[in-house]
Length: 190
Image 1 (cartoon, rainbow, N blue to C red):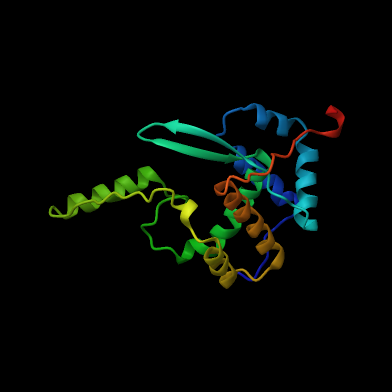
Image 2 (image 1 turned 180 degrees about the vertical axis):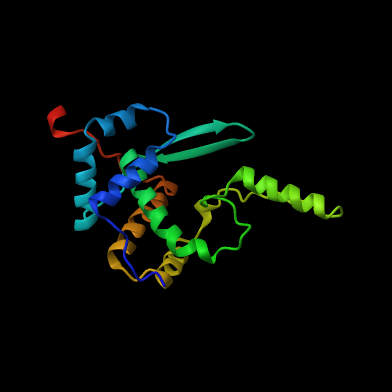
């Protein structure tokens, strides 16, 4: 039932680093973090295991594709932690979802969802598709309720503390009290 703790070994942090960077474009922040990669991942390993991990701030920008949206992006270091949490939580929760939940799941995605929808539409001529989007969904999730739901399956304090830190960092963003991003510079570069 989810009683195992998150794997915070240095090996797993490295594995999640490689999963995180797969398909990413080069950016200054990614280059800066990569310049002292070994030290940055060792520091992250220490902070996570010692309970000292603090989530940094978010960079906000506007995207206008189909509609105008404000996007908030965490720093590279924090996104490695997000990846660790995704892998851990996916192992616990993925098997509880119905088959036709498509977002952020392994071997799923937009194209697979479209193909499955098309198959249903072809099979049932009188069927229809309802497309919905909940505006600012995560911004409106009650954080205490979310933590209670997580605690039902996750009994490990270290894991819950990391989850609380990440969730609180986004709550702070919503309240516009974002912490300054932590500099990701190695000792030799100073």
